[in-house]
Length: 336
Image (tube, rainbow, N blue to C red; front, side):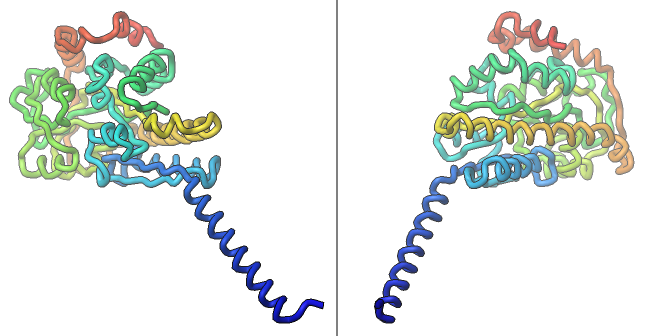
């Protein structure tokens, strides 16, 4: 017969062991979760900020407990453009990269920074989700140690001016201080449009417009709304000079450590985020002009053909065109 004292000791011992096992299991589970730090300069109201929550929710459903997703908005973790370096150093796992950021290390990618190359959102997706995308993303992986999981439609960039101005051709932008990110590719685009490109971080654009440090900025219409640039500008001019993309990228250090099933789930979640962003952004663009007019902005349409001819000629005569893979521009144009 077991004594009461022995039974009590046994129960206590087993409870202690069970608790220890439970804690060890929880610790092992926590350690097994793959840290997935995401950095973006996007403001909370923008669709390419909200899409990260869509990706996280998708991963919670399809890969519960596998990833520890940590989303940092407003460039609060890394400044815009600094993300690729952080990924190479192992300090960041995911971000969205622009064609301009990619072109710094993959010069041939600069073809996608040129004005009037991509025609519209549908053309953009066909180009990047087809063989052209496969070829170019392979170069990104080799030169940047980043795997592109999905292209996303960032929007069609329009001019947004602080003061009313007649803008019909590139000549009408002479002397206009047009805000651009600081890379040479962005600055060249500003020059090609006829303006005086002025480098300025995204987070400083609102104040720059309000104080007159800059005369204009260019962004897709949803960004004009989410960043409230319409509060400090008077005119939108529909140049439609760049059908812009961002690319959801993951560091190869993380990607290469995943098994095929994990890779498939992460890529599927990224593509779900991209589809969400694209649908919302296109819907926004279709109705935002009426909103801006209601806020007192003047909306004008210039001679887009004149802009297109001038901008393309400027690029084809530049050093950028010399590094574009032979026949790539023709292949992009032929993609239907």
